[in-house]
Image (cartoon, rainbow, N blue to C red; front, top):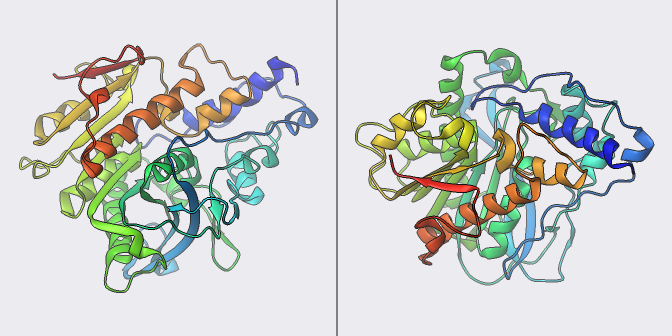
Length: 394
């Protein structure tokens, strides 16, 4: 395929999904890019990064229903619903390769972004994963990390991070929050619309989303670690070692959840504005890492002052990490996949492969330190291997 056409496809996919925005900002529609030939695009086979850890990766899907709550966005729908992908350390050579997403989900996501004429759904849905369905679990008990995606984005967009952590020896739960993402299938042949995409308009809605996610994520912990867990392999989880993280509004939701739920030992916010800053009492000394773009989340004078306020209230181990040349979605799968299509964007010059390496490296190091007790010099200061990364201590 001609490289110029690949670049157009990738730019359309990544830039329109990413935007430049804050934790709540929905991406713009209708990117001004040259339309590639559909027949050319169909030749591309995308792949997630190969995990670096010693474990094979298994994956299952859970449908969770919180009957104690009515859905905030669509009250007439009744109880709050969540879809959860459970990643777990598995025995090698068992199970069959798991799909990235369904073709219908990919079609709806691309259609929502006015990209359905540019990017065939099969290109996105056919992304190669490194996880297996029906895989037999490995022996042992492992820390649990719960991950929440950005606004409008399905949980699929944080699959590379989930696979990497699982390969290192974690159980990982990625969560789709009903009516807050595009193209997410639910049981019964339903694909719920992103109602919140139309209703959420201001900072009050931002706060409502973060607080709603806090309730969602605590409920997920209840169903995974309670007396009658919803997952058949719940025995793999060590309930005393639970971490949480998220991208964009998912990062804000992580902080909101930690403020309410003491079960979470450590948290990460990836480029999300804080809908509500930690209380004056902090997070009870629990570790927290801020990982964001240099342009949007450098200390003082950045476009998002909520990080400065939150930093002052974080009362435990903490790190403020920024990445030069990164865009808002640099901490998801999208730049990695875009790079495989030949994407080049002068406004966000960090190569997609590097974006993936930095995200997986620093987030993995954070959890390895705080949930597994493995020293991580990477988090102590500048790294010659990562010149794009800066650690701040304002």
